[in-house]
Length: 303
Image 1 (cartoon, rainbow, N blue to C red):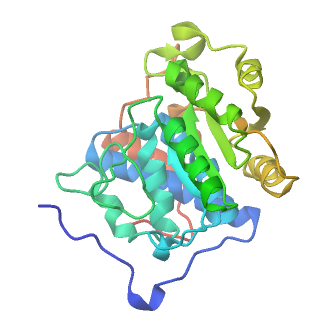
Image 2 (cartoon, rainbow, N blue to C red; image 1 turned 90 degrees about the horizontal axis):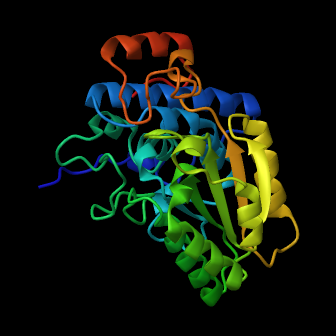
């Protein structure tokens, strides 16, 4: 039987931690990276590289860009919706969900434990706030996001649907069926964000199954295509704000966000040709201690 999830105290209910400055966002991104490393090292299982690489994007989304109310997640029906298709990078999502108020940060220490709400891939059976569907079977998330975007149109809502994907995941045919559907229905409220790091579990994306010309493929399927440095919070925010605040679009948009797998810890970074494969490998206790020393402590504190 699953244990009871730890909630925030009643006096904090309804609060959302908002970070006003870029420096505060960068500080939080460092804390998210600390959370990821500590979670994975404690569990001795999980995906290090992609989780660290996407810390800046998730931080910018949850602490600056999204319209969301963590403590009213199941009842606030005008909020933006987020789908994580490449569910193996769940640690970065769990960190920002906890840090922004969806559940207590103490829960982060339970990653991948028996009966934990925080499994290796996101699950939906426990109704953990922030997570709508189970994910991790690669290629499926964009289809769910298309359905949600269509549902919002039917309901007359103007909120956005965000779907995060991996570039290696875009070797899956279902991604392109969903992309075709989104274009066909003119889903201007749908934004895809691709972790464009050219790395996957078996090597470099270009070697395993080349997806280039990647941007041209999205354009050919009827999407607006944008590029940014996914490890530059300001660049990502600028790109997202242009999509969110610009003129109403009649087509979906995708951001190809170039990131570095393992970003933030030099010995986790780099290609798989000359480094240890950190795609699905957790840090050892020694690696974690070295990594945390490199990242440094933050004003937000560890769980």
